[in-house]
Amino acid sequence: MTVRSKEAWWIVAVALVASGALGIRLVTLGSEPFWLDEVCTRDFNAGTLVSVVTAYAKDVHPPLYGVLLRFWQSIAGDSEQALRGYSSLWSMVGLLFAVFLTRDVSESRLAALVSGLLMAVNPLDIWYAQEARMYAQAAGLIAMASWVLCRWLQRKEPTRRRWHLATAYGLLATLLLYTHYVTTVVLASQVLVVLTLFFVRRRWRDAIWLVGAASAAGVLFVPWVAFVHRFRDSVYSAGHVGWIPAPHLVDVLGYLNHEFFLGFGSAPPAVAGWFAVVVGAVLGVVVTAAASAGPASEGQPSRRTGDAVTFLLGLAIGPSLLAAAVSGLWHPIFFRPRFSLFCLIGTVVVLVVLLTRVRPPLRTLLAATVAALMAAGTAWQTMLPTKKGLRELAQLARTFGEPEFAILLPAPHERLARYYLPQAMQQPSAETLKARLRSGGQTNVWVCFEGGKIPPPGSPDGDLVAWLATTGPYRLLGHADDFAVYELHARLPRPDQKTNLPGAATTVDGPD
Image (cartoon, rainbow, N blue to C red; front, side, top):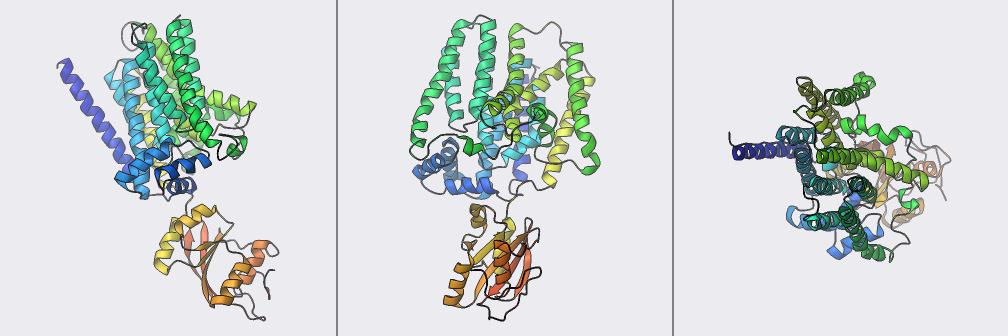
């Protein structure tokens, strides 16, 4: 078989892997409800391009994802599946550049296909490929920037055409900054690792060009910073990330045997105790076998291949280490599931490159085991819901008609409830309900209790529920997520009316 024929077959194989991966992502694209962050995406992208940019400026994210998604909506529509489908396409970008990275570093088409297969079944990548947020786009751009830097490190003639690579990296770094603020940590990690390698190899001009490219990206980001300051005091303050807990030491590298193999899923109780142990053992065997067996092919790896492997190791652990350091010095920004995605492609490529140095048949067994563990994690993630949404509220509204008022206790984010019940007034006060009953007689109210639990008597919510229970008959319509949904046909209660809602305290006049 000629070289050209082998290349053609390899391209066909890559296309088949990518097609299969896309199918895996699309087949369950709408299986879970939109959760709060995805509802925010839909709301921010509901208007004109100018309103999209302004909405993101007022929020805590840069605008590139919203702008590109707005163009995508003009083609694909604005359904939940269409919005999530945009992330699925970026997941394919990440997969393809994982393939290119592996081929460039290992010089093996087969190893590149293995990387593609692992990315295809990886549960973490699949989860973000099915979310209408900017993380899949960020991961795809990180993969592209990593490939450019890897090509730069591997150049046989480092003095030629460096401006092409510097321009490409500067552009990708700018796109990353305009996609998510925290990618600053990833870019800093990339630049630090590559600069170190340039200094070790005394490639001074390359180092200068790299610093120039990174600096240019920072300068191109300044206009957005100035625009954001028209709406709020800081681009990214501690208040914006206050929900992120301080990372523990185990979090820094814990994703290597958790998120990479389970994503957002959970192993069944029967296997949960040993799954992490098996994963850790398999990774340990891969590293040990690769170190002891040396290269699978004859000869020693070239210096530029060694530099590329060092760079990829930096991609696998550098961003999380740097984010943990920033978290300790300033405020927690290290949210493990997201940094796991940012490090995913580098880790997969390193793992496959290590496998190429393991001698068969152990190499085949280890690769199959890793793929099987990831596929199991994907299956478990698919079987158990991972997104907290209220899609059933919309289904109940289609069946029974949308209520005039909706009260969820405890109250979720109003944006989420309004997405599923857009016509209902959310969380009305007792005064608002009384005014409505005085003016219009009977009204339809949905009262939803999380876990079916009635608020305790004497609390504000308990007093409201106790008063509502005196206003008319109720019935259980169903459940939305963990909420028990009751329909109440409310009228102004008579002074001697008693409660009819189980667990609610009796009241006469209602809360003041």
